Image (cartoon, rainbow, N blue to C red):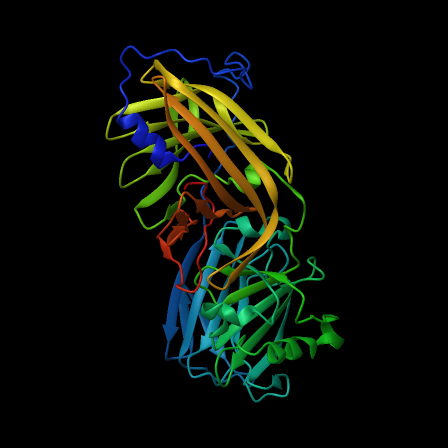
Length: 453
């Protein structure tokens, strides 16, 4: 945003709009006629949809969605003490099952797929089987290929999939929540995203990912079968399926020099975030004679209004719930376009109206300063676009506010960090599934899919 929301709302709250002094706002970026009420064409976003179900058994069979799934070992004997979770979205689903006693390796079956028929039998391999490779504390077996049908170009926006940063295997142990898991599956969609290879892994001591050499050597031991050889010092993008011990290793898909506003500012209605001072969520409203994207601050009731015109993103205005004031910008304040890169700037000079009456001006500039990697509490976010924001605001003829901030954005994630005016802002909780709120692991700190400060 080109103006600090809290400061602007505070400023408006103490400003009178009676008999305002008219102030020239300079040459506007776009006239209001050029940016007419009919020109905002907000994308038809839909909430991310997926479901998770859990089941446990002591009798060799689990039940999910009314369907029974027998659990057997390699000899056809029932396997007891199984914990299972089903991940399901519109395009398909899968079940991951684990032996709570760690006698058997975890396994996956597809419940629906375009490539394979429905499966109902969960087959478990003993950790001491000849098909299981042992390297240090890691026991690993090859489950197969094509278990997951994620679109690799849109993986970070797949329902239920959470981006966990760019990591080498030498640094992945910093992700405490992942590294300390003693049973999980890994799907590698690198170097060949067309044929994902899936492995099951367990650990005898500590976490599966705790020792980089062990997990890398275990994966590479299957090279004659898969052709995979992973360099432990090379960075990969890491994704987690929400609440399911499945981790996806991909080539760094967002390694590039240009971004679009739609990538850096992803607005999905129903998503919400918490910066520690109350939740914020995305919804849709009808403002200024058109449909806009609304970012609602649930605790205060304040709102921010945005809209797309083609590839360009604009802020339409804000709403101060305490003062019951609707504040609109003319022309709308530009926040980005389809080609954002180092050295690009966005200048906006806009009138401010409060409840329909002219009140002052905003003069602002956003500068794309460069691309950096940022580490937040052990999580590395690669290829962050640094945007410097500066603004001058005049209300009723007074120079009320002049601010400068630095914001770091990640493709398909949004803003991960804000620094400026003696403050640093980071996310504490978030939900990008339009369902129950998910709490960030204390070792994972960063912002996902939002643009607020």
